Image (cartoon, helix red, strand yellow):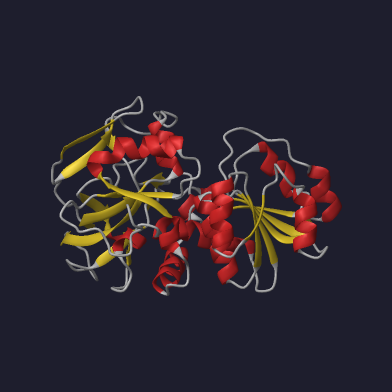
Length: 350
């Protein structure tokens, strides 16, 4: 049993872990892989020390196998392969409007409570989603971010034949683009990193670099003058916010996916003039996880191509450093079960 602890000041320590007793309603997972999310990188940089109880195990993009089932857990048995939906709803507030996945008292497992970067992890049974046998577990660790993309596309109401523009071609932006294309939409990805543009283009997506070409003109060409039915703002920068209202058609929908840590100027006149809609999209709901699993198991999305590197827990520090120094990187995974051989479909050299 090993666990990776965030100890503050851009530091991690791998320590022997304790097998905590199972509480009623919990299962113990043997964690196979845990992905590194942008939120984990923010934690690494000390930007969430007010939420994380240092030293703490973090991580929430998890796939593994059930090792033990606690008291009162029905419908699950040891050996089953699962992904974790890491949301712990708190007491419902009147303002929640029934939306417990974004409730006022929601806790995010792996941030507000200990996470999955460890060999064994106790989680509530209600967070589990069953993975089919044909889905390799390293791809199972991509179900959580893929569920984010499924949620975003679902809230957009995107339909086959519509045109979508994704502003920001990082991991979530790329997954949104792939899910949107799977829905039958035409997709254009706007990204400034040339390596990410090359990846998107190699995946068959239309691309534009807004630093080198006029984005509005590119969208006009891509849509044959109709402009975008849906715009996904995934860049998290002011330029993306400025662009999103310019490339949407009349009554177009803009989905705010990125986390903007400070207020941004928004062209409200454009919302009035073109009757635009702004849709906030945060995390996911159970049906988004099920859709993500269906898409991943159907082998229709090139998820392997999005994995940049897989490394054991002991190399977590170097992996976080690599993320900082490789802006073109996509998904990085930690292998938490040291006895597990690397999955055969992992990219060569990982």
